[in-house]
Image (tube, rainbow, N blue to C red; front, side, top):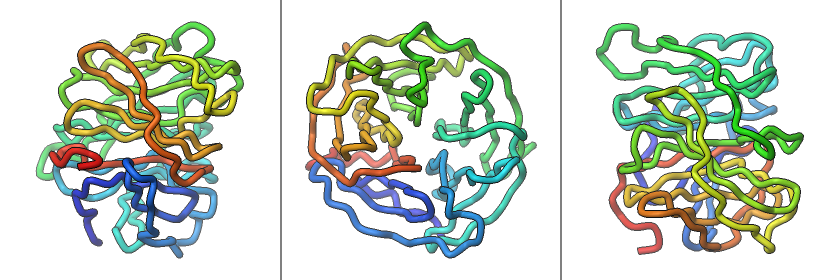
Length: 257
């Protein structure tokens, strides 16, 4: 099994292919297309563990879905089954090696997995629960939250953008302290994106920003999280479906430097 380099670019999974995406220019390159059986429906909930540098993900298209460790050459190590009847498609790590994923199937269920090497209960689900969703327009037929990310310096939270049918986009946070959702704020109506935008890949930077890719258009936006909220269009990257994002947020090189 091979670890993933801690590069300034973001990683983007689309079905069973992993890309490396420059979040400032939109340029991208293929890392691999997995030949592992059972991945045609997608590798999702992609995240990079800051403690061991491996990528972790869930495999969709099967029930129950499967938690996997992803080698940088496309091989998968199947670890354990997730709860049945659920589709998990968000994922990120916190600095302590905890992997957080969630499912909106029949209400929001979150799961915390311990991937801190050398600790008790390693590679097991250590906590799970449910959380009420924020008010409309969050819980609509637009697929809801597609990905979330831990943003350094922005507290114990996972952040996610969501756009409604008018293009109005709101940032939400899931608190890892209270285990509940909160509205961060509205960041505007993006006239250059399609209605019902799907933010199916997000990445965090070490300097406190959240980057999101709108899957239908490939547009990459930068969201301010610390010291107020805001948004800025950056560039058009690759459109994507059945996709997810991961990044080594401990990389201190500024995106676009």
